[in-house]
Image 1 (cartoon, rainbow, N blue to C red):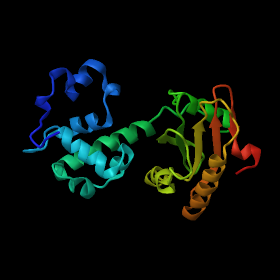
Image 2: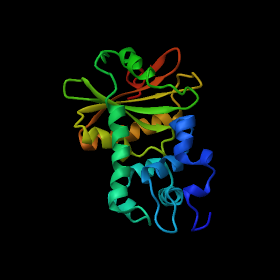
Image 3: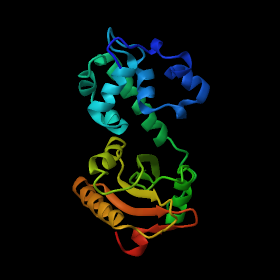
Image 4: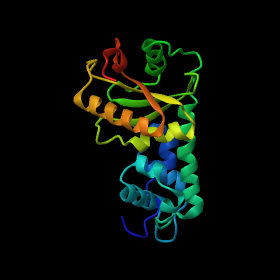
Length: 228
């Protein structure tokens, strides 16, 4: 990809905007979605090239979403205005996730929470790690997605888990993830991660009330099992 490459050098059917219109947003790569947010490139750098630079610099979309305006602006071709657009887009995604219709669900039992979560875990082929935020009256104020993919204690950092809890003034949290294998038993990584996050929560005054593993036919509650 040379420096003079622009989106218009691509066949029309392969341009991100046309691909989104024809195939839907789900068909686009993270780089293509970023390119659409960036909109226009700069002389010698197309929006696609700038998006690739962002992915290369930060490693993945999650890290791009966590970058500050200053960090994003340091990438050639982004600048403060485009950095603000990128930050706003990721924040809208987070807020949409937090605005789930959770008012109808009770958390008096793990089963009630499972009913709230299972609805939002649509891709059974992957593990979805979610965070349930509760206020001082133990009412759900939001459900956010922390990661999608194999859950590993070394890949989920406490700052990512507790960021939404702090921003939304949660009093306590419940961790939830699904097992596509339908095996309800916690893995060693599940146990290690839970202990690590519970310790971090105690330091910040945000209690981890439970960690629930959801399968298609049931669930496992760490609290009920005495693990937490």
